[in-house]
Image (cartoon, rainbow, N blue to C red):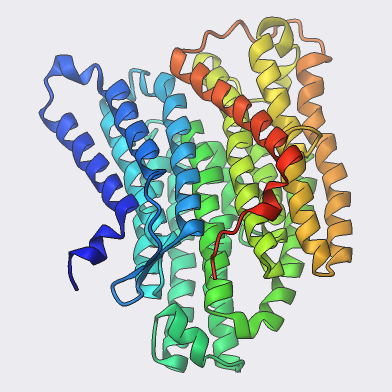
Length: 474
């Protein structure tokens, strides 16, 4: 082992530098300098985000325990962009009197979770994968309970940590089975020696279950609505986009690099889970009036669509999955950004409160409408192309029935997404939400999200992105 092993981990090392800079600034800066903590922290993270686009290493280190390549640094760059926009949206919330003393902790916990997710994504060994998973999960529990003066936030944090512990225990149980069967934790070594047996199949199912919890796939989704509703809105956004995106990619890598010989088993399992997840998410979303619970069930349904192309086993399917995550991040950022802006100023989160929103807040209403169009898959928002690509990838592998049923669910999802649009533009309200003045950081985040939704859609339309990019995950 030499220094070159560490130099391959440029994304993680950069995040560690960001973390150290933030903690030293928070500890040693004068009271006057701490007033500028937020812009300084955002600038530091922006520098990290831009710098990571120049890190294009390909290879492995620590005897294959850590792996990187085009697919790996692509997903890490997507996560960096999403986190940066989430940080911009958090300014108003962190300025509240009860939160101002915790501004530094919020940034540092976010960076810690991102370090864990990067390790989880680049793992070539289940030991490193589990270290990354726990490094990401524990700070998220603190973030969920960040508004400890609110009962809902503390309750959400407790629910999250108990469910996370339970899912981790199941995963470790499966990992012990796997190690007992093959005698190694390295992905490539396991793939070379594993064969279908009751023990290895049980180990695989237990391993998958732990990640199904992180992605909030049915029936491991029950924690999500309560946690999303109780957590601070910016943390909810982080859970529904960044955490989910990293978990999906990690699951993708594990299935195709560790369990390819068991594909006959896990393809059938995921087929059923995708269908149930999309359907349950849509049906429960129809009943929601709280906007955060509404988007929680929407997020559950979207997780099913993300998984749709994952189990095809083709290069196009892998690219479609990463592309869907990219589009989903921008779409959810826009939707939760509007919810956060309104909640921070008025405390209102009910869908009925959004009646007549266009009359008092036309820009926020337009941003929410575009986000709903993208999440619903209406042309020519980027969400239309992300759904099109995952449908195409699944169709090419003969999953016609599943694609047809997913398409029917898309019609259902269009109905409840358009309910939000109807509330803002058509429904009358004698006491609509007053005009909300958002700060510059929130405006930048929403504008970038809108640009992302439209630009990605246009690029997808003209350049057929999904067929021209090779990510090399295998």
